[in-house]
Length: 325
Image (tube, helix red, strand yellow):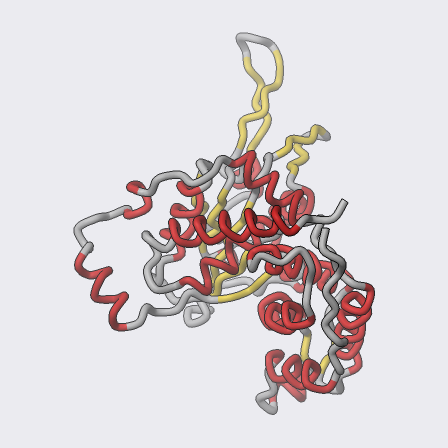
């Protein structure tokens, strides 16, 4: 059953309230907040590439406080083990049985700080849980629940001693974006409240975690016309055929864009997706999935430039509104 007009209106109102609440703790970053909350409702994950001190931890805490969820921060280091992330099974001498002790990944919002500092083995420990929302230890599966959002960060400046994220793991992130530094007016407000260590602690919850799961289920019912699906497939194929691309957007990447566009449309009070939703979200959902040809990369070509040309070259379908439900 497709989303109704009334449901779309409710969804947009609730989404705006969530954004506004988080915005009380993360000032002047409405765009990033909207993208991150969209990713949470679309049941995806976020990769933030930012310098230290731009508010990444505040963003994770504020979202957790807004949805009455739990929050955990994992500082990734070269000596971090996979069990430090997922948890470990320990033998209890009193009960004479093995018991699973949950790791920090069992939270509504998980901040994986400087993920590229951990070894590839530890990075891969996140793959299953990011893709399937479950952890398997000693053959036993453990669900992390809903909502489940991983906000991973990496420092674009300090690359010494880091491990590059493999393409398979990058493909698990729904979007890649950055918070960036605040504008002058927002910076002044932040400095005025410098004595408050955790501004998210004062936030009033807007909805419950179960309501977020309901929003995710509702967003999945947003209508996507067959012309939009064809357009998305054509865009993905064009990224693979681009001469500067060694690897273009995968099928998973195309599916991620459709999932994201459904939430994005509902957040704007629509029960259907427009071509403009695809165009607006594609840079956030697709650029980190490219693998450029080494010669093109050496010449200074970026994934964003390739995608911009693809979006300009592939003709978008005529926007069609479905019959009102």
